[in-house]
Amino acid sequence: MSTLRIAGLSLDIAWKNKEQNFKKIEDELLNSAAHLFLLPEMFSTGFYMEADEVADRNLETLAWMKSFAKSKDSAVAGSASVEENGKCYNRFYFVFPDGSFEFYDKRHLFSYSGEDKIYTAGTKRKIIEYKGFKILLQVCFDLRFPVFSRNQDDYDAILYVANWPKSRVEAWKSLLKARSIENQAFLFGLNRIGTDGNNLEYEESSLVYFPDGKEISERKNNIVSSEWDLAELKEFRSRFPFLAERDGFELNI
Image 1 (cartoon, rainbow, N blue to C red):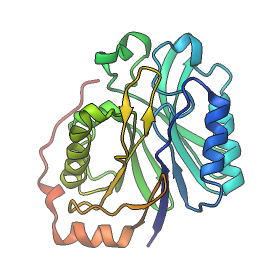
Image 2 (cartoon, one colour):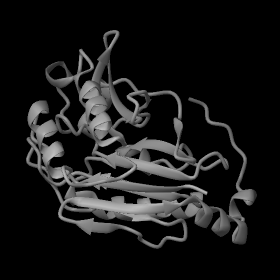
Image 3 (tube, helix red, strand yellow):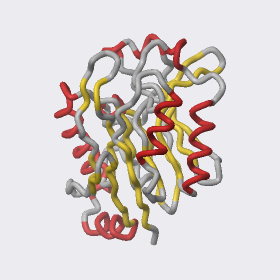
């Protein structure tokens, strides 16, 4: 059975400065080793709504992620503002060590900040396979919509990347734990830290859960890590086969 070591960086994102963020990430993760490095939502720019100023038009964030993955011989995942064919997306990239990649476009856009007027919503869930794990990709506001993330016995773990401010952080903490328990899945919720260009504050609140609701985060400086064991997950689901009793439904998106 497989194990997966994940290291997430609770990054204090430099506002609208891609090169500075790339350098900060490289410096902070210089001596870290993992199968997967996880980065926050819009890690290269911050959660900035003027997409015409910051959106990748030449795949610059993806190019850096490919270079980083190669240098670490590890996967790297995180979201970026991306323009494609005249539309902008909050795109969650998962880049494999060989440079190949998959992506998920954020489905639930945060209308409270006007994200829905700037970005185009994704239309499909995305589950990737890595190191024997099937992993659901989700971004920030998606966390509030449990139907969209409901486990149809088709994934083992969930990754949430976010810019979730301190003023609403209790909802973030509570919902992460709930999503892990109800879906009987490993869960890694990675949030940013610091203060953004809109003067919103973000506190250290990145969390990792086992599907019984136990927190399994390890912390060192701004790095939150965890090691997942697929055999342990399968044994837990075998003892408590609650997913078999889930309600059936269809998503209309």
